[in-house]
Length: 138
Image (cartoon, rainbow, N blue to C red; front, side, top):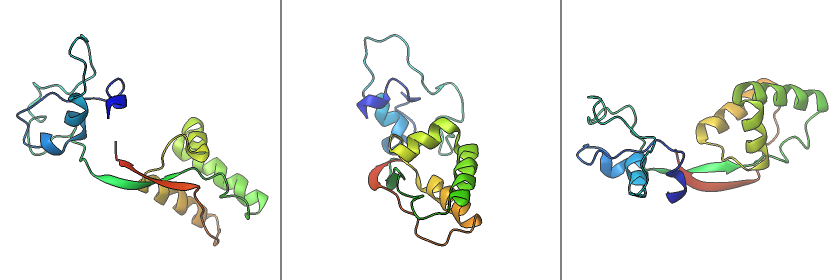
């Protein structure tokens, strides 16, 4: 969690009813007290310190997929090209290649999108990911 402090919206609201299970609050515990500025949740917004906080991120770990460098091996070339184009349109080119190479973990929702695109293009074979990793849904 320490590595998230510099680029994740964090929370310092200690009296929030959800703070004990909120990733934003947990990451905020690692904030350096000598630093002057952080990207943080607005404590003056009345929605933030409530049971329906829109910035709340549950501290649940899930299985994420990592990489799909071998996914296209058995697919016909035209099908591979169409699927790749559609996935780039859905995730952006940068994120697609980061996910493909395993540099960016693939959430369960993103896995569903990938599977839907592949099946919608007629592929009935296995959808192979390179590995799995347990992580938070940041």
